[in-house]
Image 1 (cartoon, rainbow, N blue to C red):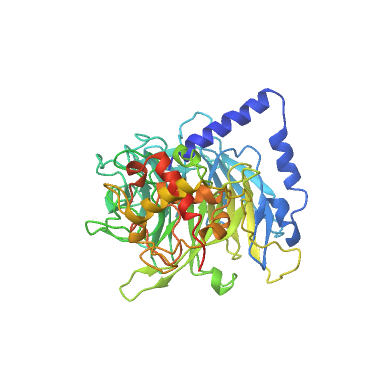
Image 2 (cartoon, helix red, strand yellow):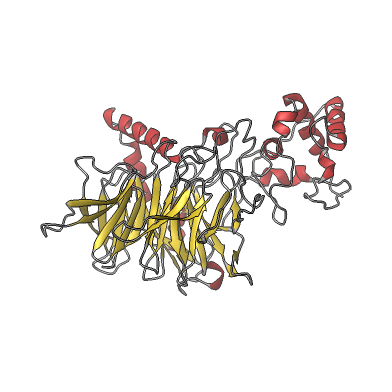
Length: 514
């Protein structure tokens, strides 16, 4: 993706500007959001929408934790928070009231040793940190309760050769080895470093470093299930050119040793050359970041035994320029084991964050109490989401945002031109009716009859016209459930002029439902 961290640093610069000007708007919003956080009906004031039966509270909002990247529980039961600038906070609920009121700054990185710190894990009595190009341990060498001894165990990993791609999240497996995802050194070019675009594995001291699996663009975080299965979410390319003419989907992947997951040759379920497909495809440019496996029985069956993914949200310029606002939510994929030893599952939204407030989830983790702890980036807020089973009239339910912009009237000559394109295509591009049959029949693609009546509710913020336009320009951006990505011709954006695309949109939006 673009660079999520590029947007992050722009945001930090904007906040710094407000401080210089003596404005306190950001802090004021944060304080207002804290006003009512105990009752389930207060959830909208938290800036999130929850499924029925769930409630949320602000667990902690530590001062000085700007640009948070990771939350995870330590062996002592406390919650630890890492920031991109390298600060580490320990957060403890001492009075058992489900609020982390005791916050300690364990490491301030005052000398700037850590750069782009985005991975944190525990093993035995040590904290492990993943920052730009290396993995290190951190210890309290003098017993004063603060971390002060940084010891690199691996250095020279591919880092920042492509903006914001580096070694990412880390996790220890049941084999006692450390795993780390490493981003590619380009947006979608062939790898040039043997360690890039991969998941690496090593011993706790950094020895026996090896490539565990390949074919990832930017696997930001890793999570193991109780039975030892490893999962990651991979970001999609974001720079369109002659070799990348659409925005492919992001992916949830079951990571297996020795497998190749396709990058940069294939994306999503449209696999080539024997690469391994993902479990499921996410929308393009959702900014998949933190992942965690949920196995507790504290949630009802439909919300457990699967992977939660924090989706930071669209940050790529190519997506923003096209009006895409995907992500800014936590999604859940319930998993089922298949006979061949793989997994299958379809994702569904779990918590939707307020886009108007600019809320962006960046990580998720599970507590010993069975609650899901979500780290929000913009205000450095940690939410605690738990299941109560109580469904009241005041409990919000997810609502589809409908764009009420009316569908324009099209000239008949424009509609006729679009009909010809739909039925006959042009040189170098097939007719649409190859996959989208007429008369409301189902083909390789869904029927487009009556699309004008439902297109406004398909993607939040997109009008019917823009929904159809994006579906033509970026065929895998919005896949209708039950249909496969990759079947549609991928290069209409190169084969059709802007006028032809407009006429095709006009014709499609005149097709009446049978």
